[in-house]
Amino acid sequence: MKQVYNFNAGPAGLPGEVMHQAQEELLDLQGTGLSVLEISHRSKEYEQINDETQQLLKELLHIPSGYEVMFVQGGASMQFAMVPINFLPAGRVASYIHSGTWSGKAIAEARKMGDTAIAASSEADHFTKVPDLHGINLHPETAYVHLTSNETIAGTQYHSFADTGEVPLIADMSSDILSRPVDVSNFAFIYAGAQKNLGPSGVTVVIAERELLSRIPAHIPDIMNYRIHANSGSLYNTPPVFAVYIVNLVLKWIRNNGGAKGMEQRNRLKADLLYSTIDQSGGFYSGLAHKDSRSLMNATFRVMNDELELQFLQEAEQNGFVGLKGHRDAGHMRASLYNAVTYEQCKALADFMVDFQQRFG
Ligand code: PMP
Image (cartoon, rainbow, N blue to C red; front, top):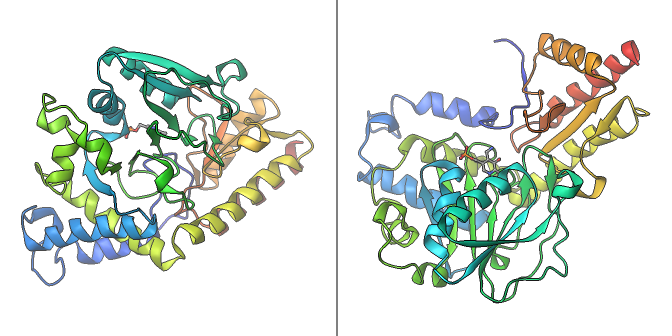
């Protein structure tokens, strides 16, 4: 097979072990003689996968007992709409932290549903850093505060979070869930599309405080009501069986590799290697994000000029590096360093960058 180094932003590379196991089991799931693609979601085999996957998330994220874990569909974008539909009653205000493209999309959806406020924004800095959370002033009628823990496009990430006290804190953790330990008790609600750190696209993991779910008004359509999904154990309707199955395998891989702490160590080493290559290049490469907001998941950078950027991308592609072209909103380069990306792959990229600079710098 062709040697590739996968730095895609999502869907992204999955651990090799997981891909092999999925391949081995594809035609015969645990001796059933059936594929996971052709079993009922009400079968005991799938129920076991569903329950175990929820259990694994609870274990790996140390989710406290007052929380529900569920799987929903429609991607993180669906949650941009479902969050205000479920948690923004008339007369209240949804407060958003605006840190880039993804939080911007969440804000746009919330605005269609009710009153919103921007509690903090880094728009004036072109989203090159995360907005400071300390000392933010919340509207007295704030129903919840929403933030994006990692802005996949800008390459910025929160390295600590504010305590919002009684006001529920809601986080889109699509691009950094389980890349490091987080204190779930700090959040009332977390959602994450699976396709970066957890598995394939098609399933979104939701972690919700039970108390918050109890406040959801009954008039919301069942399919959009988080309480219905939680109460039916994520089996309200036919779930994305295959996606959940792969998430199950990925979570076991994370557990076998040191859990959230192990992932953080691994991710730090990878990001340090890449950012130090950028910082030691004497300006040939430069990071797009402020140093203290740099993401461990998405390293965004530019090459000295447009012409060399084009050359860099062409040569990278010829050498098997995939997914390095930045998102159209940010331009330039982006290397996504999710959990499944290995140190060796990052080393190959760093070596390629040094070599490229030697030839063109
Ligand atoms: N939020 C963040 C932080 C993301 O990175 C993405 C996808 N890249 C989304 C939301 C949207 O996810 P989806 O395409 O699953 O709707």
